Amino acid sequence: MSNMDCEKFRQLVLEKREGSISPQDEKILDGHLATCGGCREDFELIGATFDALRDVRDEEVPNHYFTNLLPRIHRRIDEGSRGFAGVPLPLWIQRLIAPGSAAAVLGSIVGLYFLLAPSFDPSTSGLQQLVSQVPREDLEQVAESVSYSGPLTRTMEPSQRLLETVASPASLSQNVDRDLVSDQLQHGHSFTVFLAGDSPVEDINEEDVDLIIKKLDQTSL
Amino acid sequence: MDQRSDLELIQEFKNGSNNAFNLLVLRYQEKIYWVVRRMLPDHDEADDVVQEVFVKVYRSIGSFKGDSSFYTWLYRIAMNLSLNEIRRKKTRRTFSLDDSTMQHESTDPLPVEQLEKEEQTRLIKAAIERLPEKQKKVFILRYYEELPYEQISKILKTSVGGLKANYFHAVKKIGEYVKHGL
Image 1: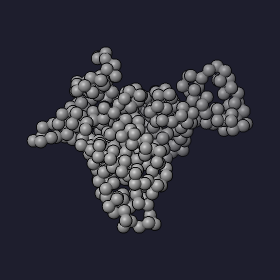
Image 2 (image 1 turned 60 degrees about the horizontal axis):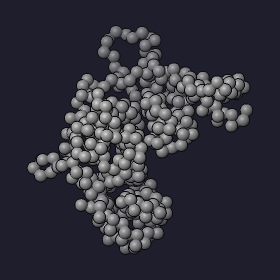
Image 3 (image 1 turned 135 degrees about the vertical axis):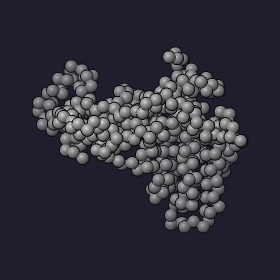
Image 4 (image 1 turned 90 degrees about the vertical axis):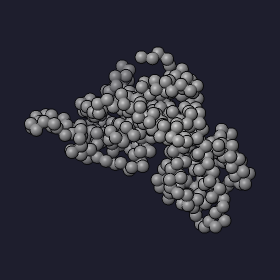
């Protein structure tokens, strides 16, 4: 039996279990199962798994959990947005603060990088050294804030990668993709590109840096 | 039940209506809770992430352009925050028999059949928890949320073919865990 048949089988077995398989495909699947012992085993295992899954009951949720959730969300929003004398800030200010603070923190990181750059050991990545000198909380704050700063589809992934970076500085990406830099700059996402990409960070020239800092300044409050 | 669409509510929220935000929370809180809860089996951890999901929506709604549907966006936030939580706390917990959900209020012995069922449930939950991240996300969105592959593809930014392969492997792995024990 060819591997291609077995590959196709995976899709068909799921379709059969979900009741969406066509009569022709079902015939093909049955024919394959009659001759392929490995796939027959898989088919039985998957059927038994779906049967077992049906018996699993959901966990219990504490009484009134959903009735109390909304006020608790608002409390958390208010806690994160207290202005002077504990008065909550208006919504539009709250929305500006998140990207603003992300930009400010990362702006500081960028500044620190260029201040300290001459003393860096050339044997390791500049960015790696930079991150090693920035307090973990600051990086986490950036990671938390980055996703507020632009269209989510574009910012969540770098944010995700940043979190991974924070969790494991040794595996820090040493690279920045220059196309991504200019693309991100045009869309106002400059502060995410330092931490994700594919070409060496050393490839960024002064012009790029100026552009990034300029963009950061524009984004800061 | 409010008849306004998500997009209408989002527009009102963007214009400053907190009530529109409240309606969106009420509309999706249960769905989001269960997605997160299946990623993070502990209720308190799930609760924390669910709140964070909606706080994030509150603060970043301005960045929602409507390129995808609101619930695709919401699911993506929920999945990402859940994964962050898993990574942050490095929760590689297994369900144990003293898990509160497994405790019996009655002191009477349980029938053998029921004990076997409970053991199987415990194994399945542990197996789901141990799935690789990608397979776990696909499994939860497909099996529990019953989302079409096309929708999952938008949420996870993965091809439909890849998702089907992930789902197949996830179900098979769960079956193998249960069959052979953990």
